[in-house]
Image 1 (cartoon, rainbow, N blue to C red):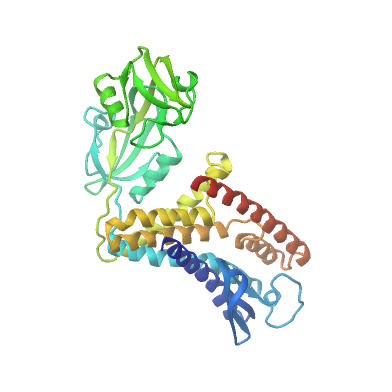
Image 2: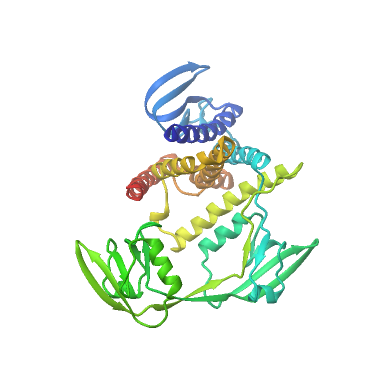
Length: 429
């Protein structure tokens, strides 16, 4: 079922994108030779008014093929290149624009049914620097570290991509009683002593991963090892380990760790290391509130803005090294994410299940719109660059040169897709 839903979401988003190209092509009297959903061999097709409408085997793409789109056809009527340059710009830009329109319509539905998440402070830690600076429960956050905040998710995304560090100053702008207040204070620091490992899951004591530079890694413990005792006290599961740590908090004093590997038992004396975690000193709302009247449209638009900005910020981090290719997801990863969301949402009822599916559609549609506007050859954004240059120069770039550049870009995109798909498969299995 989840695969079928993923295919429906994919198909709808791609169809709407191509429909944008189709409508503007017709508006500019450009002959559309084929309008198709999917890739590969045709399963079904019909011809109407000179356009072939096709359903193809693999539902992971689509196309709106226009007469003379990638060749110099002179002044032949109905060809893409014979249309005015501004008409062609509208045709190319229509695909991404229609993705944003679809994202907006779906967001309005989601906000109308489920509500929105206002960035409200729900609690301030007693004795914290945030409390001393005057931050109060109920304050509405409008800026965080200079980053404009419309929704609670804006804070989450910024914090995820810009990890708070010990000693950082936190700068907030909040709205209280209709007035904007600027608040600035140093982050608090939570000091703990750690061995430096993550469990494979919440119940087991099997080591899933190790924190680089921490004691267990330096002692030679490896992922897959199972910690069986601390200072001679058996820890058969995570609960037993947690109970032991609560009664005997780790400090700078050595502890003896017993672990097994390949059926053999080992003991290591390890000194826990101080680990400092910076804290903002407050928590913010992550629950939905009902939108009233025209606020449904306002917050629907803000949801789309959030999606677009998040995509742009993520791309910035990708190019600056904050994120890597391994963090990208292709069709396989997206289907897996939709499937996971579907499975986790089933217990919340049919309404929330479909709201979460629509939310995934909004995310994908906004992402597709942004990604297609990147000025890279073969993408809509790359084609727009050539058209804008033509509008400025009053004459087109050599069609053969442009075609070769787009073909090279397409090959690079195909290589990237293979790499991303390989990474997606590794993540799943």
